[in-house]
Image 1 (cartoon, rainbow, N blue to C red):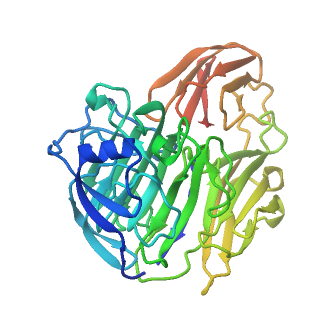
Image 2 (image 1 turned 30 degrees about the vertical axis):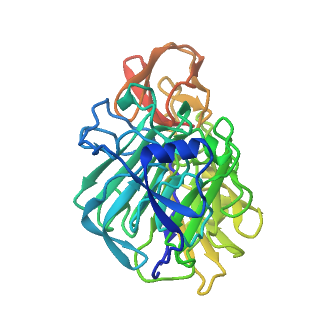
Length: 481
């Protein structure tokens, strides 16, 4: 499943009004545990230790779908020692990052799920955007706690980063939450660039990417068992009240999402999602709509004709939201080559969020490549538009016209969650392999007419299923949610 959000945002200077107090990290930790921190004060932490240059030494990690997550390897460096509410030293960038028309060559990585350019932020309780106090890019602003990390002999993850000549990659890998909890963990990634690195599609300079997201709120933010209390925030905030956008706030488990500014949402909505957007250029008070193509990994394959494949329609849902409060949306869905091949149902959820259910009927078109275009326009001043193209590959069943279908099979449901069913069209025995994106075999066995395979333990992602029968091989892909 590859989910995209395209943002194009365009801004001015920042003002911060809070008092800053320099305090030893040990004193800060004690005050936080006692609930004695002053919310009107920005704390700058001091530490008696220097961050070591520690490279990632574990096995490659790929926690996303369709190469969403950059694999952790020895090129990644520990951003900061395992901690609670600390931050990295000032990190110099080998490129210039454009943040709403203001350029930066250095930044801080903050343990609590964000990066900042003007100051370090130990703040663990998130605020919704816009917020005049913070200049940050926040893939997931929540109370991350890595003190029980693998580096310290525990079981939680760490915060890592790597640099390319044109991009910075930061990964919060399997991180727990305050107070030293690891029963639930989050994995998410931020990439920023000068707009030329292939890690981010052309025309964008920021990417958010998510693996498995399991918690939202630490104990000191009134969370209980990782949920409730003050929600975590996902978005971008320049700090001037004009240049910002909010993807959403999150405070509970589940996959529900009702738009950026309605009730707090459910964190599993972010699982395996990837967002691209652009924050380069002059200031603008209107950010284009967000288009989220859910459940889609690259091209959708469907089959035309009366075949045993039985996959004749592509059914998918697109979610469209506007980052600004009180804007409204106009969403148009078209298939330029065959307009009658699609059926569309739109369900508004308030002014700022629309779900769009789309069915593409492959039996109405010949084999070939087609694009379903989603055009979303808001009523900002000036109005802004985002266009998302969903490629669909229509093909005839390769066995159509043959008397036997010895090497065809069906895989369902797709996407799948707990169980994957494999059905052979002729009831023969066959060998089945399931292979992940790194080339590792995660399942092998024999299949008769039908077989149900337990996949609940697999990481979310895209997998290849290979069926070998009578010395011939056929394969297909499926998405594990």
